[in-house]
Length: 356
Ligand code: COI
Image 1 (cartoon, rainbow, N blue to C red):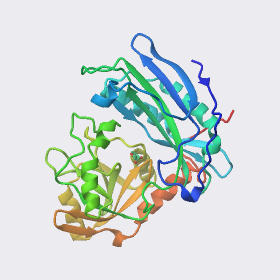
Image 2: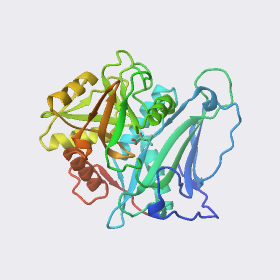
Image 3: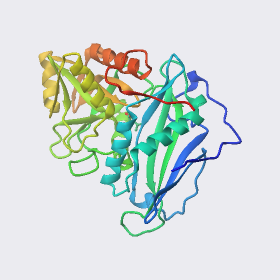
Image 4: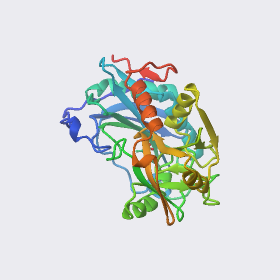
């Protein structure tokens, strides 16, 4: 399928690297494609970034048929543009499609479309240390209809924008509140896919934790409120003695691409990574015994986010003396080293964008 291209007549002013936050600035163009029952996915196009008009009745506004992905493009020291395991994102997008009864996309075509978009907006990919271009593919239901059923029309859209650090703390440890009142997801629900609804469901807890002075929450399982699931919008790892523990994917946890990459990296270093259920009690006990060495979140946006403090009901613990843990730092350096092509890429994770 050929992608039609309409270039902007009004290129936007770029934001200086030191003014970049996360998610406020958008590049000049976007990719968009339509779906209609009977016609399938069609009319792929790259057009100037801008507003799209929808009827108030479109189903995404009412029943939340919305899914998304997040990945980054990096500018290397040689000036090349690379992506990190992008095939994994489009595979997961299709898993999200399946969970929300959204018609699947052609993963290879989606990657090709993204490459073309990046070629057109290449000047938007920043080169300052720690910056990258965040890429947000998403699909929404666009059929105007008030009955509850899977929609008959959708938009698949990709927008991009230059970003700096996700958390204002950067790699500095964040304070985490162990959430005992709200849950993020339950097995059988949407927790293991990237449904927008999961993020809507997380807001209340996050706001209440913020009011108590915490950056994010640690999510426990929705049934027993006992087992650790995720931290904020990230997967979570604990170093307990000689074991590196991350919650196993039970069906309510997002299978993060950074999570998977960390497991593969740690194992390649000969370290003992175990995917299993881990209770919050075990974490606090390990701290009491002096064997909880560090804990960190993993995700595309922040890469690694060390946990400096955990508050569970009336118990508070400080991890790694509130400093960046050794393994957190090593993983961050290795992952970002591979992503920016500063270090060898033994797993062939990096995909070069051929600028045409
Ligand atoms: C991540 O990349 O860690 C996320 O899921 C955050 C994103 C929703 C901004």
